[in-house]
Length: 60
Image 1 (cartoon, rainbow, N blue to C red):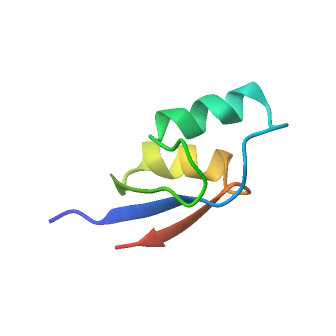
Image 2: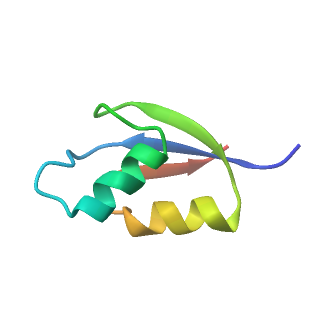
Image 3: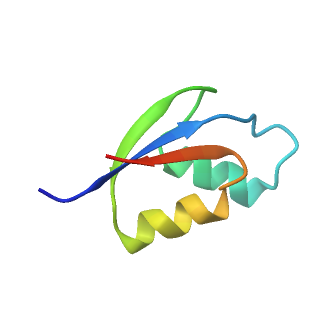
């Protein structure tokens, strides 16, 4: 089984760049403290890295 990333939105997207808002939406996050599990691959790592100031990431 492939590794997964547990991504939790911890800060609001209000006042952030539109590009960051689109990245958060593409990750499937809408509300603060909402958590999603995504596959651990370079694409997801890149998206998380772009919004690392808004999310917490945990390897599962």
